Amino acid sequence: MKVSTHLAMIAALLHSRAAVTAFQQLSTTSPARLASRSIASTSSRVILSSATETGSAEKGGGSGGRVAASVSDKDILSKTSSSSSSSPKPPAQALDTNPPKGTRDFYPPDMRLRTWLFSQWRDVAALYGFSEYDAPVLESESLYTRKAGEEVTQQLYNFVDKGERAVALRPEMTPSLARMVMAKKGGLNLPLKWFSIPQCWRYERMTRGRRREHFQWNMDVWGVSGIEAEAELLSAMVTFFEKVGLTSEDVGIKVNSRLVIGEVLTELGVPEEKFAATCVLVDKLEKVPLDAIQGELEELGLDRSVVEKLTSVLTNKSIESIGAVLPPDSEAVKQLTQLFKLCEAYGIQDWVLFDASVVRGLAYYTGIVFEAFDRKGVLRAIAGGGRYDKLLETFGGEPTPAAGFGFGDAVIVELLKERDVLPSFEGSGFDTVVFAMNESLYGVAIEVASKLRASGQTVDLILENKKPKWVFKHASRNEAKYCVIVAADEYENGEVSVKDLTAGEQKPVKIDALSEWAESVSRQ
Image (cartoon, rainbow, N blue to C red; front, side, top):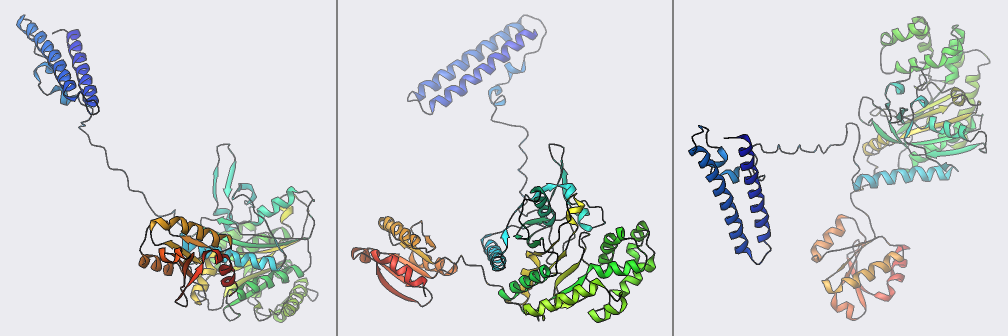
C-alpha cells in the first residue's frame, strides 16, 4: 500500500470526524436534530465504506501489503477524538495559604488594632507639634551600606532591578529622611519636627516581638543642637506609654551618651575614625561573648584589652560613678546631667535612668542614646533612638544636628497583651445595624441608613433577607450600639423601631426625626 494512499485515507477519516463533531454540536440547538444526525452518520458511512473498499481492492490486487489500521479498526473515530486523553492532567498544586515567613496578614480585627495603635502615635505626634511625612519603601541600596559593621547591612532585602539598579526594601526610615532633607538643598525651614509610620524590612532571626517586617513610629527633630531635642522626644515617648495604660513600673528608658565611649577610647589612644565601628561591636556584646567578636576587633586593629576596659566602664549605673572615670571637664557628663534636669521639668524622671551599657547598634549615633525596655525583662527593647549629628555628612551633605527615635509595632503590642491593657478589636464597633423585616421594605431601609450616615453614624445595612435572630446576633458579634428595625406596622406610622443593644431597650422613632436621634445619642 502506497504512503500517499495511507495519507489520503487518514485525511478522509479526520475530515469525517470533524464533520460528525460539527453536526453533533449543531444538533443541540437546531430543530432538525434527527436530520443532522442522519446526515452525519450517512456521511461517515460513505467515507468509511469508500476507504474500506479502497483498502480491499489494494489487498485483492495481490500487492502483499497489510491492511491499514485505519481500515480494520472499527473504533477509529473514538480513538482520534480530542476529548479523550491517555495521560490525565496532574492535579493543580495546592496554594500555600501562609504569608512569607516573618510577615503578617492583617484580617479586620488585626487592622482595627493596627489602626488604633497608629492613631495613638499620630495623636501624640500632633500634641508635640510634629508633621507627618512618608517615603518610598524601595530605596537605593547605597543608602544603607555604610560599611561600619552594622547588622542592618547584612539583613537587607536587596536585589538588582530590571534597570540594573541595586535597590533594597528600607530596613529603617532615618536614611530616607536624610535623603529628603538633602534633596531640598537647604530649602527647609529649620528646626523641623517630623514623624512617620513606615513599614520596614529586615531579614533577621525571629523571636517574640521581632519579625522580618514591622511598622515603626519615627519621630525626629532636625536643626536643634541642644539636649532639649532629646528631652522633648523622651517626653513624647512617655506620653504615649501613659496614653495606652502603661506606667513607669511597666516601662523604663535607659539613657547614655556615645560621648562616654568616645572619651574612654580617646584615653585609650583609639583614633576617632574607629569610634563608630567600636560602638557597633560593643553593642553586640549584649548578645554574644567577647570571644565571638575577636576577629572583628583584630580587623579594626584594637587590642582585646581596649574592649575589656571599655566594658568595665560601661557597667556604671549612675552619672556620679561614670564621672569618676571620665575627665574632669567631661562633655558627656555635662550633657547627661542637663538631660536629667530637663526630664524632671517634664515630670518624667521616674521613667528615665542612666545606664552606661546602652550603646545602640547603628554607627551614625553621635551623642545621647536611649532605649525603652520592659522592666520585667520578658521582652526585648521596645523603642530606641538618639542623636545623629553627622548622618548627612556620610552622604556628602552639610553637618546638621538631628535626633530621633524608632518605635516598632510588634513589641509594644506584646507588652500591652502582657499587661492586659490592650483593648479588644474583635468587633467592628459600628454604631448601628439597619435591616428590613421583608424585601418590600428594603428601599426604606436604604433611606434610613442614608439618613443615619449623613448624620455621622457608622451604619451596617443588612443586604440580604435575614431573620431577626441572625441580625441581633450579628450586631452583638460586631459590638454595634443600636439596631434599627424597619417593619411594616411601624412604617405605616412613619416610624422605625430602634433597639439600644447596651441597655436592651426598644422604642419607636419617626423616620423624619432620625437625624435628630442620631445627634442626640452621639452626645451621650
